[in-house]
Image (cartoon, rainbow, N blue to C red; front, side, top):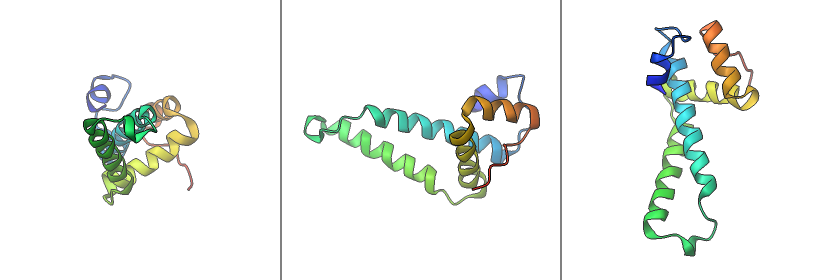
Length: 106
């Protein structure tokens, strides 16, 4: 996501770290969650490696959710709240035009 943001001419070159890291964490989180949807519910059918990978995905998702840092953690929560409410495409378009996340009250 960092590369895409830097190479996409529509985004401000110096995006505030909280916004950039928050958006990048959202993409990572959505990726991990999308893979989790494909995990089988029958643990008996999973190989040892599948189980380890599933555990790691859950661990990393939880780390993103619970990060206490203002840039990564708060940035993720603010960006994720906006993405859940408005959708990723609308949030990215908003950031392109306003250089900030939409103000979504919790």
